[in-house]
Amino acid sequence: MIILTQRGRPANALTLKEAEIAAPRLGLEARLVEVRDADELESAFTTMARERARGVVLVPSPFLVTHGLRLAELAIKSRLPVLAWTDTSSLRGALMSYGPSTSDVLRRAGGHVAKILNGAKPGDLPVEQPTKLELVINLKTAKALGLTIPQSVLLRADQVIE
Image (tube, rainbow, N blue to C red):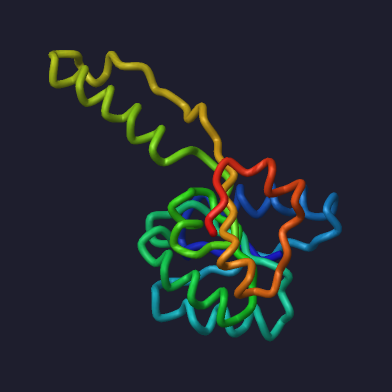
């Protein structure tokens, strides 16, 4: 399993540590691949495919969100399934995502904005964690990769993109 992220992000070390703990339980080995910029994405996917990676996990970062469509194209071209953290990634072509619901996070952020516009001090508002997590599966991508998603997994999904 490859963990793909942008070089220089402090969260990378913690993410890799957690992956190294979880991967053996799944019979996998975790390896971090870092890219500096969009120019390195294609060579990273070429290398991962050549090394016969079984899949790619995206670490949350604005860089990877910005390049979501390109990541999906490269993943399909390289025949690598990609797991992301946001439903937006699955809508753009990642095989699946599991993480906070983008629409729920934005709705809740809008509530905070409304409170501030009505006079609340931002420092007085509580910090909120996402409460709604969603599993999104992209069947178009699965088909392009030649994968069959088990019915039991599809039934658990909050959204299936056909």
